[in-house]
Length: 90
Image (cartoon, rainbow, N blue to C red; front, side):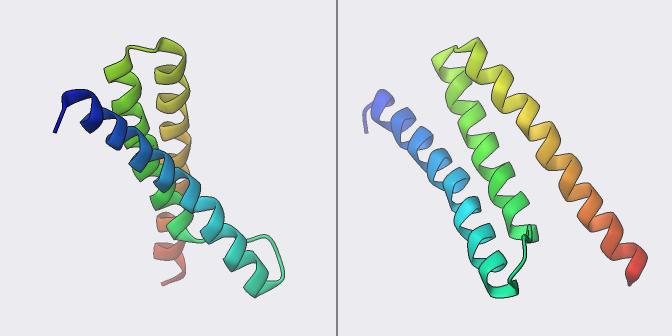
């Protein structure tokens, strides 16, 4: 596989993971008839964010790198809150 095709595939996989989070959130909210962010939303956010950050670093795009890196911090922090809350209620 060509080097650029590999990186294009990584970028597309990252975008697919990132997009899947909205689908998961929408289905869960529809099922519960209220806005809900299931834990899978944060896992898809982190998976997509890490993959897209790798792609952005490969492309050496500082705007894309800053955007993905700062987003990852927010996704990880939200996942921490979800896990911490579940430990308190368990």
